[in-house]
Image (cartoon, rainbow, N blue to C red):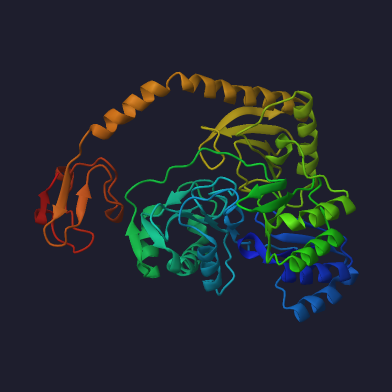
Length: 474
């Protein structure tokens, strides 16, 4: 049996020169193809008799790798979406790179660094998920404890420079207390966050408003696409395999045309940015040389499959064919196939194989794959019945969209009335810290909409002034 070699590409990008070195090692070890994973990492297979030579080559090239293991998951980031799928907000190339450069250790938990203005990269597929807040250089921090599905929001925003320290402290707390937080249905998250914030000693800013999930939209990530005065090229492979020979030529063409980086995506594809108009023909020639199609149907691109999973990939192919025959619309939907328990793949619709070899179909309540609020749709479905069920569920999604439009005006009026309702605000006479009933106090573990008068033994979270030191200001 062949060994699976995994190489992390932190943040989902790699220099053309470094990728070329990796491909040379893979080729020397007998690999003709490589693949990319859901966490933007790279895989290839090696026969046992070639393993020792490959390890020596890796050592010479100073490449970090794992054999048949994932002890150090890759760090996922939305850097790939910057400029081409998202041009808003403060999060840009330099911030991603600064954070990744400060990480002088390999995380043992899954880390996500995601811009809240995009939906190309999943928000909560990591164990520790940093999501950009509206405040420049501050991040929401969401924890998904190992082998669980629920996410918990840290009561404080985290400053960019403190992210490495927060990761290290969180890992130490989780991995040092696995029995109480891993694979558990009920976790006491408030004491955990209290201990975390105390131990990390990092700069924090109170979360004053919940993060709002953007409506899901998966951009078409294939082919030549223009942005500003440049082009970007997205390449997807139906079988998830990329020829080593092709990727080597991609690297060499990037170097020749002064393109520094190549990006991997959570959809197991690659993207090359910064292609000049004058160089576009060279890229077209390369695609023609390897007979690569870069215009697949959109309903084939919106799937999440477990890494190195032949069963899931075959089921996807089967379902996509039946979707095409039905001429099915799947815009704003994405599907995930899970053949193993607790793999954490995000999706609007989840097709989950159970212990009896049948399938359960679930979907998020609002059909947003970044939501973790799942609803059971059908249970114990045979494989032959799956496509019909999914077609019906897709139709239900669009029926809901149509129905919701008729209530839009009434909802808007309701929201305005809610905003006009005033809540009392009290201010500390010593340090001017405010308690707003609308938001509560996350640092004191007080829920929203709790009146100030109802609080007992309340202290200012900044100066520790007593409740009597507060005055009504609004």
